[in-house]
Image (cartoon, rainbow, N blue to C red; front, top):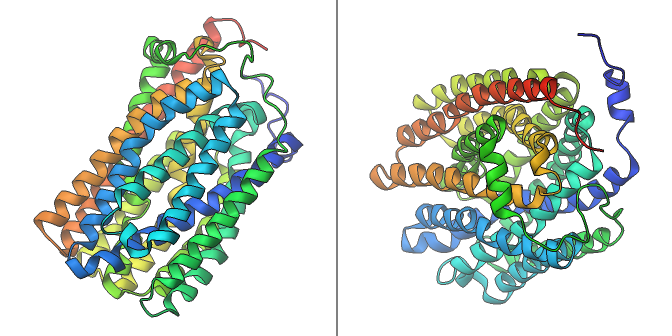
Length: 431
């Protein structure tokens, strides 16, 4: 096979246009919000609920509700995208994020004890409405040839931001010595970032290629049928399920274990900072190393290395070793998550029957993702209920969650072959 032009590293990065960078500016705000929220909402819950002795269980249930309810909000988001516009759906998402932060500011620690389901649902709604539009934007503003490079840029920028914010936030919160005043100020800061993202969203290049403005019908049933009809589509849904098994719990579980061991937000912030240094290195390397042909190998190798590192926790799982493992996991995480993510968008972009249905496909996909996330968190919760405070059970959960990614590596290889077979036996995709 002859080498196509535009495959050099320099040309891959140069092909990313201004519309993507305008989108990245807005998305970075959300990446910062999600990163800070995933870390400190759990420490907030643990600090408030530990008086009743059920902090870890409450945090796990909060996250189960968050992930499990998101697909339902995405169905409503699809309706807004089709009946009104993708921009309106995204800005409704910002409204839900703003309501989340206002609710916590007003109710204080009761938001983590008596009413913790409300923040879970508001966060889920915000993400659901945001990411339905996001799925159209990624396909509009990138191509398969530069999507991995764009993902590397996004990972690098978000890691640099997260390098500073969690550490400073952790120092700030720990300075209040258990007072919830610090958390009120912290969530007020996140409210400000949400307003900034809203302003940036008004300046994006309108979507013109991936959505028909005259089409007011939702295509959820059509998207599901289109995915199930194609081998690549069926495989991407199964891959998404196994991705969710790990991504749900691992998004917060290590930080939760560290905070539960030492009860210090500054240490949690320090862990995030050191982890982001590793993530920056990983994101830079990812942008240069991983190409469409290397996606499966990227997931398999990274999963193997993380499992090997986790074995050490069987012998010692104090907060120092948990931080060391967390840093190692952070550096390799992009090599697991981004091949799965970029291939997912490639499938949407490659199957003719899914053209113009990115939001609906993303909603269907989210059902499988949420199912995996709920099962992964449920397994972790079961381990904590059966063996409360047992480090061996927690380590076994981490290894089991990461081991599920070998299924993803196999499915990535299968999907790549299916797409190659389809492209060789059918006409090129539509303009």
